[in-house]
Image (cartoon, rainbow, N blue to C red; front, side, top):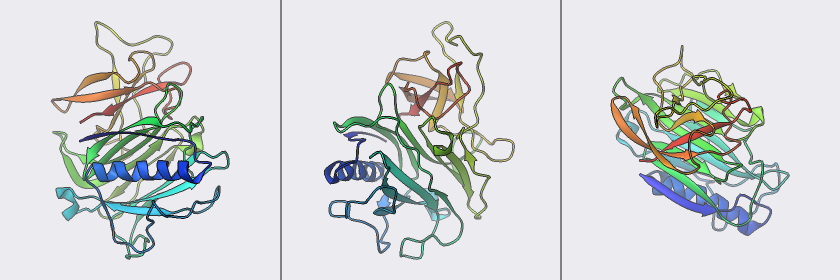
Length: 286
């Protein structure tokens, strides 16, 4: 499924903060996730306006796909504000809670949030895809900026989702400490937290575009498991300049054709595929 919305990326007033927070929560619900019944979860229509760089209202949502029967996914979103009035969404992911907003067992927690390099009070388009057990988001898409979020299960040799593990990824700033990637397995084991790069990529020659005969190279985004497991599909990375901003394109992966949407922003949080450090992103659009 896909979902498109527009909301602010400046959160210096209560109305702007509320519009941003509700836009993120609505995207999960539109793709099939459900609110949990954990006490303490915020009603974002009435939740108090948080200060800057402090704890803020949060919500928890749970997966609803078939694999949730053996490996449920529960994501916690805390809608913070940075000192420059940027949105700062703290992310966490686990598989069980105590009913009061606290995880039971292992969980992934990203407290050092990526923030956009620029902000806007007028609504900015955001794009989402997924289903009740998958989430891919490009928030606040402009030619200069984007915030990327991904929740994706492991995949088998045919590309089908499995319940072995889940990868949580947060990208979208040139500041290395704002980008994170980590894996949580069904048994509770966690991979080493990757900070900065956010994903492993296949490098392309620098200084030139890679398009040839109307075909451009894209690189899969690998989960940080062992010596890199089968790649996910939520995002692909490509050379900045090979694709038109917000243009659709297709990718052949796992023996199937998949629809993607190009995000050619300057600050995607992925590096190493262009001499200036810029890397475009393809968002799975199905």
